[in-house]
Image (tube, rainbow, N blue to C red; front, side, top):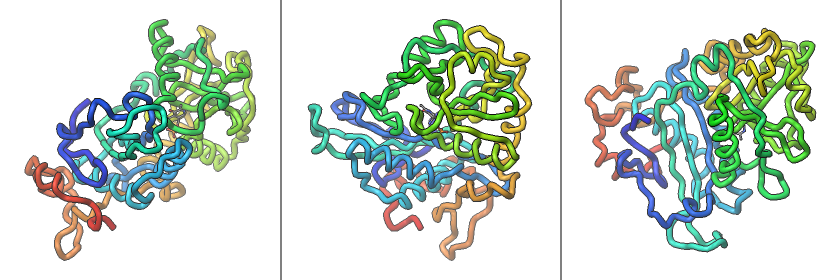
Length: 348
Ligand code: PMP
């Protein structure tokens, strides 16, 4: 991971190396945090965060499910994300907001513990690799089942819940595969470790529905919208394991991975063993959408234009200034100055 200049912590921009927490932070011990994975792309409109408002909304909902009141509004978090990317001078990056129970209270009742919020970003390439995206990945059905709503909250993107994904991922990698596909507690196909899953059969796209133990993926929403706009039939339904083996195409979607073809599951070749035609079409349309080449999906892009990048008279500064040519923060502020600046009142 390549450090960037600044991380946003509870409303303050602090230098990357100073963005630390105490070892007795509640979330570190009990997994009491919720987070997001968001991407900013270099688009036709300049750097833009993909579906920023939807990610913030899901973050706040995940927090609510774990009884955490986020001490910032959705609009403040959205604006802080844009300003962070701008100040770090990045044109494309991965963004990681997290809301977690902080330092000061231990024990399993978290209700008196503080709720802290940080946002970090850094450059991160395609999660399952360029080759995975172009040729397809090899997946293994995990021996670990996806967390059940009887025990946890699949619809929350909560830190502790990811131990389930970690076990499945390690199991698949140690067995020589790229990714794991988890079944739900009924034995139906559920999702990847950090991706939603789809099968294509006779031109129809099927994916597990909201009643299944999926995370309601924001890329999933985009994929379903794009697919139906293109005239494909998209159905949400239970998928049996064998149906996946016999599908014409299988693919995954997620913010980190984007859209990734699956070329093998449990050593069964999917279709011809090459990425399928519908997967290819969706990959291309999605790529156009995230890079601002598609007028139809422009509203999914939240352009990075932070107030810090304006002159005192409010005129935008040149594009080159985003790169922070003097080696300091993108707005020319040193880390120390930035650390002292609260965003409150500074963001629009
Ligand atoms: N399922 C899980 C378990 C995930 O971690 C993710 C990644 N956030 C997804 C699905 C896909 O969600 P999204 O498209 O919003 O990234």
